[in-house]
Image (cartoon, rainbow, N blue to C red; front, side, top):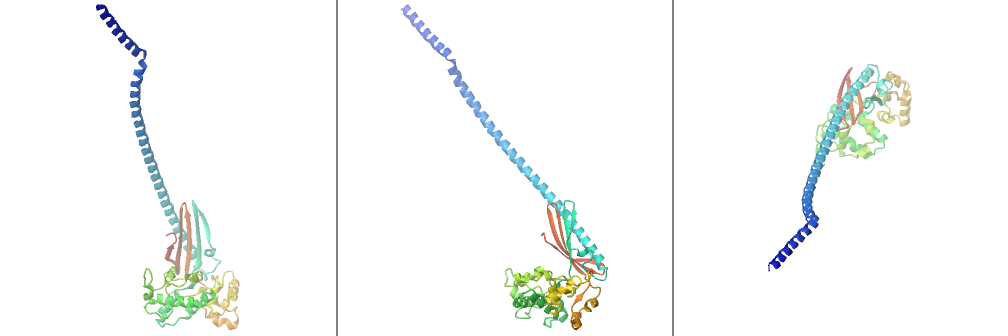
Length: 359
Ligand SMILES: [Ca+2]
């Protein structure tokens, strides 16, 4: 019995020892399972940390790019403002230069195309850009505000004057149809006259313009500029042919044309009420003395004797007190264009209108 018990005890011990030995013989299995769990947990933590780091890095990168873009935008804005301001200063300088050129010219007895203002477009190199000045005599075009002048002088007599007949001649010379001629002349008359009564079936007043979208009223005052003509609702395609030949001068400026600066024969045809045809008018311009005529008598005396009275009646002049300077400045990224309208009273220059073309 004792022997059996000892034997059993030995067997249990042996089994225990074998179990221990098995565990001892395969320690890796136990160790590997624990390592896996630890590694997995550790890996999870490291992955989460990596994602957080990536997210934070991305956010910082986005923030940095945004700040950089805003900074760059501010730099561009500042540079644009600086360029714009500098271009404006150059425009002012160009205006002063134009006035100086003109002041020198009007001290002479006549205004002609050999004077320094009349060199056509003058370009000047400036730091970081370019400046150009182009001056024209506003007495070398037909003044459309003569309509307002005539209405004032004729105090509503209603008849179209000789000057308006010259406007008709000009339009006919430019192949503008008779219907458009009448439409334009009478609508212009009603546009600038002070009353609200249609002066002719071709004319229109407030009642017509109130039907427009948006509605507006007739100005009942002299024109402020050629752009205003679009409001008359006359075929602008046909009218625009006339634009290089006409201008808008302040009220009371009359309708004389400077024989020494006029370049378009059509204007001389119109001014002569058809006395000259276009080739004769061109011949007059071509045969002009280099520094222009010094007196109108000098011009009239070289014409056919029979024509002299009619030529003497033409509204011609050899001087001018109205000029237009077209200025253009490019500086850095800024481009500015301005038309400056200058009037002289004696030697005193007065800018009576500035029109910016860059908004
Ligand atoms: Ca009116």
